[in-house]
Image: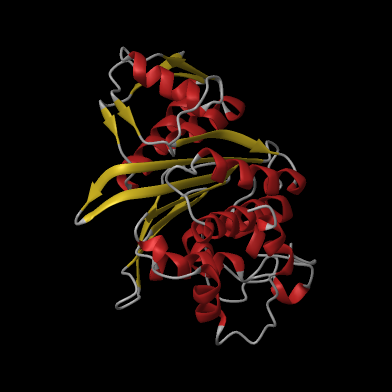
Amino acid sequence: MEGTLKLKREIYLDIDTLSLLIDKIFESAEQRGSLIIDFYNVKFIDACYIPIFKALTGLTNIKFKKSSEPKVNKYILEQDGQKLARDTVYPMKISRDLQHISFQTKELIEYLKLYLNDEETGKYIAFILQELVSNIFDHSGSLIGAIINGQVYPNRKIGNTTGYVQLTVLDTGVGFKETLSRNYSLNNEIEAINKAIERNVTGATKEGIYGTINNVGFGLYAIKEFIKYLRGRMIIVSNNGLVQFTGTGKENPTITTIPKQLKFGWKGSIVIIEVPMDTLQYYEFDVLMELIRKDDTNDFELENFEDLFEDF
């Protein structure tokens, strides 16, 4: 019997909405075998949800009912790469190997260049995407590869801050716990997520994207530190575990975490990152990277990474 999930009028990124949506989708799909996701009443949806719906079409028997609002349907088509995207949208791309991600990183920055018009911002975005996607190909076993997208919200206001960059990377692989259990003893996905952001923690048994085994275990830790210093937010979902990390900014850089257990959960991992546009000007990329790694005993090299910017 086919089930229906009616979406609410406005769907913003928060951990309660994200976890509820994932659980309802997989609960309905498991209990009823097929599901209609009803967008009819939707007037706004955050970009990070579109790759989730895209991936679901390959995981379960999912159908979609269009919104009554033409601009919502147009936006979803833009995100799905079926229409010419506006200058705030980088439409979803599926990366199936590491050879594509350098091109897609440059392409993303080109799409959003009206708002991301400096090389330092591009370096942050490139590092984040390179690290997250390489982790998927190195460890996850995702059959669909990695789905990525990006969105600039120049007018989004949260507190005293206006303007945000949002990046989403997801897969349908094994998740954090199974990957890290190769090297660590872990009880659940939330524990695995928190372990993954520690310095020098890795599930790798081979060289990383920077060419030496000494460099693995740095990328996700560095991204977490970006979040801390740039007053950003990162949400990681791995199977039935979710953790939100929120940074306080450069004046007193700390991280607060909120864990959440999902009933059904995602089949793989999702990483969503949001950073205020103004805080991306706080530090030059190399300066913050040096600050992050100053206590690291590994000789971390960025030569391959810098090649991404030879044409900038």
